[in-house]
Image (cartoon, rainbow, N blue to C red):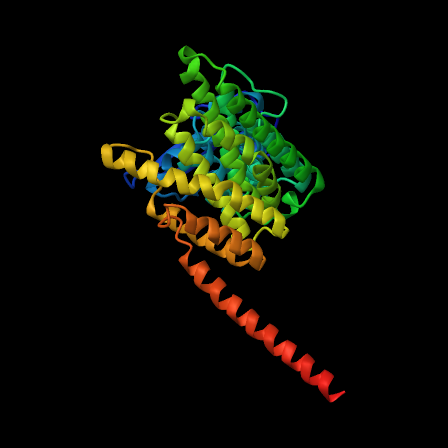
Amino acid sequence: MDLTAVAKPCSFGDKGTSDVVLRLRNSEGRPEWFYSHSSVLVSKSRFFADQLSNPGSGSCIEIHCSDSTYDHHVNLLRLLYLPTDSLLDSLDSVQSALAVLRLAIAFRCEDVTNCCIQYLEAVPWEDKEEEQIVKEVSELGPVAMPILARIQPVDLSATKNVFISAVRFATSIGGSCPPFGDELKTSAQEQVEFMLGGDEDTPLVTADDEVKSVVKSGLSQVCSLFENELSSFLLVPDITAEIAETRILQCLSDVEWMCNILPKMDLMKDFVCSWGGMSRKILEIVEDKKLDNAMWVLKVKLIEVTGKVLEAVGYGNVILPAPCRVQLLKTWLPYIRKIKPLLDAKADEDTDFPYKMDEDLCQSIEGAIVLLVLALPSNDQADILTDWMKTEQLKYPDLSEAFEVWCYRTKSAKRRLMEGLDRVGNTTISL
C-alpha cells in the first residue's frame, strides 16, 4: 500500500474513496465493516501507521472490542476524520470523553488524546464522575495526569495564603461583606475547621508566625465585636431589642468558634486570657436587672464557653499563674452557682423550656472546678471553700471532694510542720 500518496479529501464510511476496511465487532457480536482511508489513519494514529506499514497487513484491519466499548470505538474512528480545531466541540460529556481518551491512548492518537485531556481538565465534574476520573487517570498513566490539576496538592505557601484569607473572612477582619456576609463568614469558618482536620501540612501552616498573627488578630476582633454588642444592649430600646439580641448571639457564636479551633493551633491560652480579660464586664451586663428574665440562651452559651475555659486550665492544657486561676474561679463560680438553680426552676415550670445545662456540661464544669481548686495555694483554697460553705447552693458545683482533700492536706501539712519543728529542737539540744 502506498502511504506516500497525496491525501485527498475524504469522509468516514465513504466506500467509493476507501482503501482500508476496519472490521469491528458490534454490540450484537456480529462483525461490522467501516470503510476508511489510510491517509487519515496513518496521520492520526501511530497504531494504524504501524499496522499499515506492515507489507503483509493487506487492506483489512480487525479490531477487537467488547460490547460496552463498541460505541466508543466508533466515536473514536469518527473523531479521526475531524479537523483538530473541531475536536473539542464534538465532545459532549465527561463519560464519553473519558471512554474516548482511554481508546485514544491505546491507539496512540495524539490529537484526540490531547483534546480529551483538555476537555476533561476544563469541564465541571460531579462527585461520582470525579471518583471515576481519579481511578481512570491513575490507570492511564502520566499522559493523563494534567486532568487532575484541580485536585493536586498545592504547595505550602499557597495553602498558607488560602488559610489566612479564610481566617480573615471568618473573623470579619476588614469588615463584613453584605448582603451575604453572614452566610459567607459561616462558610469560611467551616472551611477553616476542615483545613485544621489533621492534614499532614496542617502543623506546618499553623506553626507559621504570620498565620498565628492573623488568627490572634481574628480572636481580638471577634471578642471586641461581642463585647461592644453586649455593652450597647442595655441602651437599646425595647422595640429593637430582638435585633440586637440576634447580633449578640451571632458574635458569641463567633467567639465560641474561636474557642473550638484555637486548641488545634496551640493558641488556647490566648483565648483563655481574652475571655478572662472581659469576663467581669460580661457578667456586669448579663446580671443587670433588665436581663433577669431574658436572654436565657445567651446565659447558657456563656456557661458553655466558660466550661471550655475551665477545662483547659483545670486539666493543665493552659498554664496560668495562681492569681489568674483564682481570679477566673472567683469571677465565674458565683455566676455558675446562681444560674444553675434558675435554669432548673424554669425547666420545672415549663417542660418545654429549651435552655438547660445538660448533665454532661454540669459534670465537666464541676470536675474542672474541683481540679482548679485543688491546684491553688492552700489559703486560696480555704477562701473558695469557705465561700462555698456559706452559700445556700451547696449542691452545684459540689466541692465536697475538694474540701475533703484540703482537710487531709491541711492535717498532713500541720503534722509535717510539727515533725520538722521537733527535729529542729532536737538538733538544737544536741548542740
